[in-house]
Length: 197
Image 1: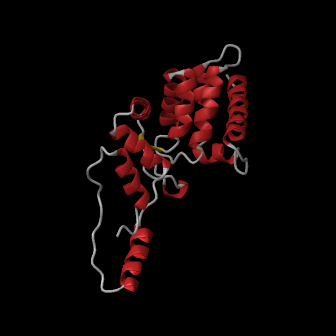
Image 2: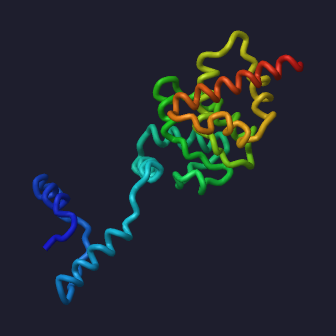
């Protein structure tokens, strides 16, 4: 009997071109033992998260995932394997979906700018508001204020650490709203930086 994976088996049989499926075979002394093993196997299974999917896409040769990974590593970061913000470490990027969104719509240039600026500004910090910062920086370079000076913007970014910038979006729900709030904070710092020149 197949006790888990019946749908996968049925789909493979319908296709007709999948001769083998991986499986675990067990012999149990009773129905209770079989049920206990079923529960144990399903509790031990690790759910796939979006970063697992991303790493699998790279391994399978997905062109977009490979390009995103290259943008990340060219900036000096690595792609995280952890989605939980409490487990992130300095030098890791977990916001691959945000990068994909900008890349599809605007190409690699704003992505590369934002990632490089973040890597240089926060080399030893956890990117606690990384997605918001990335989206804010790309919004600024895609629709820049008049006479945008990238060096001045970078100097404004350097004035504070990641936690300071993260406080601007604390409690703000929704990625777009967080990005806009962060963009506004960065542009205020940019203006202040210009006033001190």
